[in-house]
Length: 111
Length: 111
Image (cartoon, rainbow over all chains, first blue to last red; front, side, top):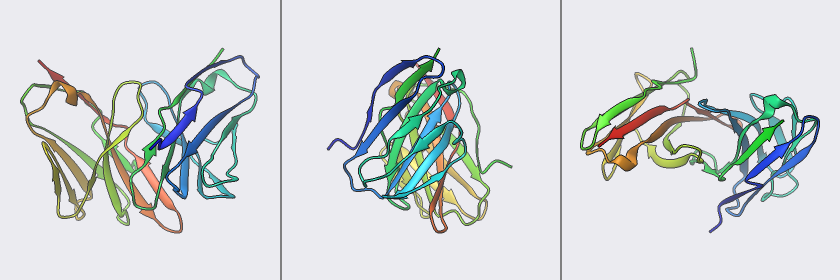
């Protein structure tokens, strides 16, 4: 019972580089989400998806892109990394009106 | 007014004490309510759902007051291992699921 799996766990990027954060869930959940959490702060929604092929912006989408080609996978793409994107990124999945299951997070530092 | 508001704390309590957290929400159409626990540098984990009739899980009791739009979490006989940040989560379904996380209340249980 893997739940939500995120890779990588840690990454250091240089300013201007790009990368993809991977997220996979094996619970057949329709809803998937990407959040970022800055030190000492709350969770901020970046993007979410209500099913394969359907994505929408959250609270802080600038600098990110997502795709949802399958129910299981919801990768987050960072283009032209900036220091302001230094954060911990959490992927989560759920069904409607049920609680979230989070991945263990990706700690990203942009230098 | 924030959609979900919590007292950030920290609440410093001795072992064995009883501690209560409240969380207020602004959207009267909110349908589902949860408490999550987040340990330092870890992902949030679902602690319990909150039902109108109130619910209990061991030392933890959650209550919902729809009229006053708040939920509460009571922890009895606090343990050192209860030290964490407790997040209030409110969910509303209107064509899609909108979920709002509170910024969390930090609890430190002291020996």
